[in-house]
Length: 207
Image (tube, rainbow, N blue to C red):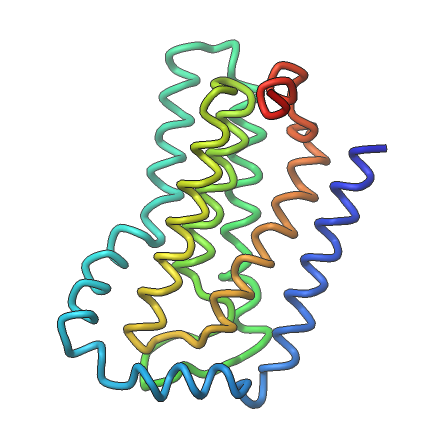
């Protein structure tokens, strides 16, 4: 039964992603407009310069780095091949949510900028990496799961803030990215028997 709940939760989150995309496809929400207006021009100021540096790190490069890490784990311990292969599948499926669905929604950016807007590819990349890191810790280093969750969440929020400050994404682009990753991630991880976590990890979280 717990597996069914995880899958249902994932489906609901992904449906929310689709609903939000349809809602903002033609016209941004008032929240989007207000935030974009308040931050207009920040990309050329110190806050934007800092965000520009951070966004080079908190972005599409992270899933590739994690993919190399998974390969290194397998090369060091062949018994982890099945685990790392399944994690890699989740990594790829979650990352594809941006590439696959931007053409579906055809949403334009807050300012002139190449590529479409919904969902944010940078936020998808960071959220995807964070989710797979949490799963990896759950199976190999259970005592680090809480840290992995907090750090992943903080990195995702920071990545979203950077893209918004730079004026290249609406707030809802970043929210949609998180919904997409969690939706696809929960369904795929459950289907691949990565969730529920091992018993030792459940005891660690409870205690």
